[in-house]
Structure formats: C-alpha cells, structure tokens
Amino acid sequence: MRSGFGCESCGSPGVRLPADLTDDAMIQCDRCGCTLMAWGAFKRRVEAQEAADTREPAERRAVGAAPQAAR
Ligand SMILES: [Zn+2]
Image (tube, rainbow, N blue to C red; front, side, top):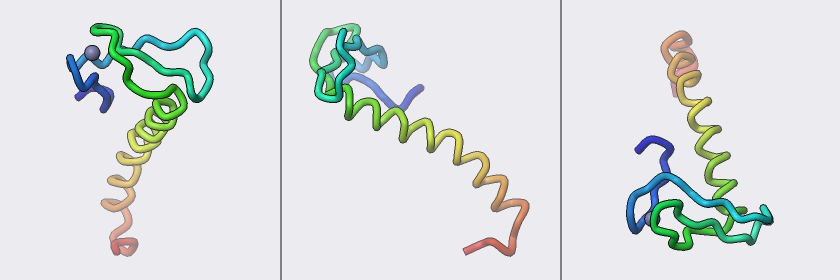
C-alpha cells in the first residue's frame, strides 16, 4: 500500500481523472477503466490521507518528548 488507495478490481493505484473536476464526476481506474468513485469522495479521501501522513510522525515525536502529555 503506497498511497492507501488501490483499485478493488486490479489493485492499481493509478486513477484517470474526469475532464470536469466536479464533486460528482466519476473517476476511473487507469489500468482497467472501471469506475472507482466520485471525485468529491476521492478528494476528501486523499486529503484525509495526507493529513494523517503529516500528523502521525509529529504525534509520535510529541509522545516521546512529552511524557506528561500521555493519556
Ligand atoms: Zn482497476
């Protein structure tokens, strides 16, 4: 799992973006061409993934550096 995303049918992480990037435009798998999900849903998923990627290491450092903050 590189990006946390893969086509359910073929496992490819590549997507084909719609010409019009509206939230309800459907994106397709770049390899097999199947419909994956709406652009709006995909965008939120990617944003959530990026937020998790940038947050996790900092939290791990914070826990190690600040034992009094342990819950
Ligand atoms: Zn596919």
